[in-house]
Structure formats: structure tokens, C-alpha cells
Image (cartoon, rainbow, N blue to C red; front, side, top):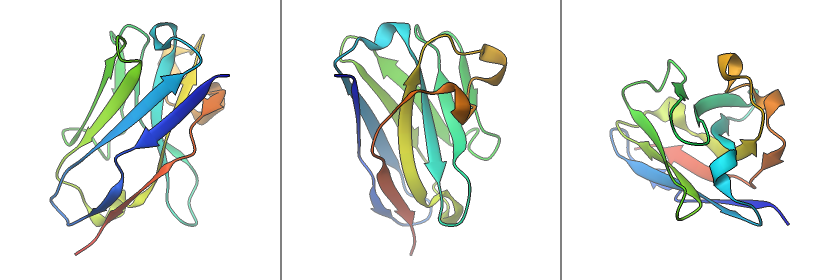
Length: 126
């Protein structure tokens, strides 16, 4: 059974860092585009960063460019999101998702992703 499990969320002060992990089981990540998404209370789920199967294509939302870094270790079947210089507006539940056959011109569109994790809470507050 295909499963994605996020971890690494928590409470951090503004300016701090967290690293989220997305571990896959039941399938091999190599052939999947992986995306990180987030949803804050009262807001729609939005794409944060996405990475193609071999890591050659990466996309970031403008709001996180220069602060967040996505990476993948296919040998460990895991994708990471390093989040630095965190801001209160980064507070949300973060989800990872997987898909095949993603249109690269719109690779962080939620509608393209079929498999989702359960999410991990990130709270940025002093």
C-alpha cells in the first residue's frame, strides 16, 4: 500500500529552522514528482515546493524562495524540506504528496497529486 509519512514539524521561534521529512513506503519514489504543500487555518492548500523524480526540476513558491530548500534521497525513499528564516506566516499544516505524469509547467498544483500524507504541524511563534 502506497503511504507517505511526514515528520519534523513543531514549534519554532521566528528566524528559526526546521527540516521536514517525507518518507515513502509501498512504492519507489524515483518515478514520482514530490510536492510539499501547506494549509493554514481558513486558507486553501497551497504548493510550497516541488521536485521531479530525478531532482532535475525544482519549483518554489515566491513566498519561500531563498529560505526553503527541497531535496530528495531516492536511496532512502525520502524527500526533505529544509526551512530556514521561518516567519509567523509560515505557520500551517505541511503535507507531502506524490504523483506521476505531472505537467512540469504547473508542477505544484494540488490537483495533480494523487497520494497525500497526513500532514505535520509547523508553528512559528515567539
